[in-house]
Image 1 (cartoon, helix red, strand yellow):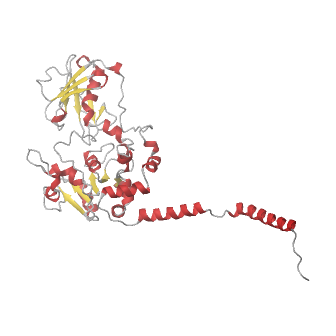
Image 2 (cartoon, rainbow, N blue to C red):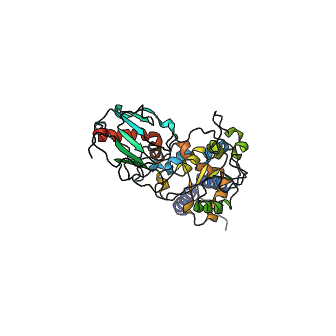
Image 3 (cartoon, rainbow, N blue to C red):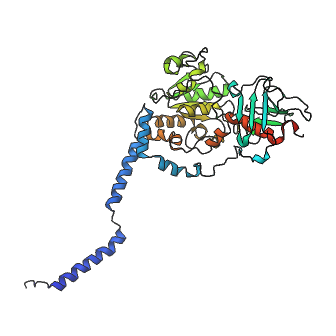
Length: 405
């Protein structure tokens, strides 16, 4: 029997019913949208780019690659709790705050006694907070009637009478120990009267601070040590045997002498009038390497020395062995903490992979390019650079020569 043509109403009804079924089931089936498909493809390509081997030599070019694939916005979001506007206090760092009303003196003079490793360029008259002036000097002529005497390698006088200068004793070595007769104790630890970190710049005198944008792609690690402590030497020897490296200094030297770096990198020769020293090139030479091995003499809480801060300042990524609470002192994602790896072999493998991954390597430099300091800002604020004013403020609060007890 021949088909009869459908009327207009029936066709419209069938089409409407069909669309209703499709609309209902589309919510259950969740067909992928075009935008979602594009996003997944983009993420896959980006991931492959980041993890793919790409031996690089120019730091500026890898920064540009990181900017395009990650960027400061995402980095700040990742470390938002560590932004300067956030509370990022650490029990390892003292709170450097005082009220002007606590000061009892408008001027304080500190006379540094006997030998000390504190550099001469710290000597001067400082203008501190709340209108306080501070004279820090090694000259008994300039400070003929000091308010405080600073000792480091010599024990202060056993007795202090009213009207005598306050006795200050400083010990920044790993096994810090009070003299027992000081009025004010300075160390690297937050539990002591005045804390001083190694993060400043004043102890780095007469050095070439040129930072190279070119990184050695074949020799990955810089190491320099001239105090060959057995335990540190053994650790360095084991790790460096797994990585291509240059070892300057006296310990494990493999470049032919302690002055060789100045010939490797002529731009690192210090052009001062004084006779060049092997350490003149230190900061500049480090900058030519992707990694710097930094091992403390002693691994103890809060003892984070210039070994680490030199490497950070040079534009290399430090491989660090030392203070277990090192992250209280450094910027987020700025160092490789060697103690977090189950073996030196795993650490070496990670370093080799990172050396060929420009985006992942750049992430270790993002803190300074994006302004994410974390506790590092406070670490710098408590450095030797600011010690004169902070000590003078402490002396002023106690009343200087008029202090009781």
